[in-house]
Amino acid sequence: MNYFQLFGFDEKFNLDTAQLTQVYQKLQKSVHPDRFAHSSSQEQMLAVQKSSMINDAYQTLKSPLKRAEYMLSLRETPMPNEQASFKDNAFLMRQMELREMLAEVKFADDIDAAVFEANQVLETEFNGLYKTMQIQLAENSAASNQAACEILRKLKFYQKLHIELDRLEDLLFET
Image (tube, rainbow, N blue to C red; front, side, top):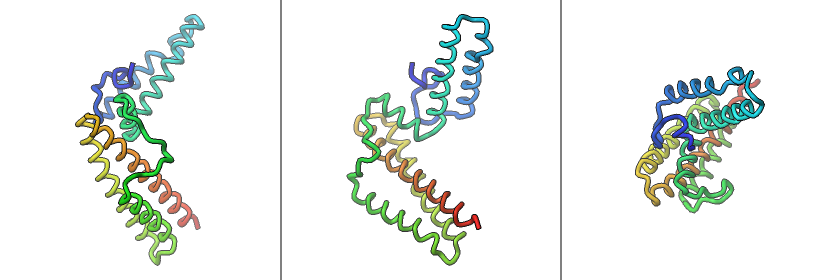
């Protein structure tokens, strides 16, 4: 059973996360170990396995990028290796520019402003790509799924940069 079916959702990218959480809690309650305390060891083990699957499904569906990746796997769209280089030369250039922007933050006269500006740039570009990926996933053709796959890889890059910026900010404001 796929994760969307497990939670009673249609297989689409946009989900009601509050409803997702409600269904998750209901499902977890149904397989809670206390309910199987007087059951056979096999039934207890099955409950633990179901609980684990429900947790995995919830973690996947609640995270937009994991959800997109899961949808693409259901659609049998091959995801390139994380280490594979991008074929998009413009994006490769943009990666270098963004890395330079992060490297320059620590040398800025106004570190607060530099962090804020870097954050704004990352958020704006991430959101633009995110919206495009939503459109591609909704289209659900072989070509649009492949395009969504490439965009997802770019979004993961932005996510990593955002984490780097957070770490840099923590480091700079530690003193």
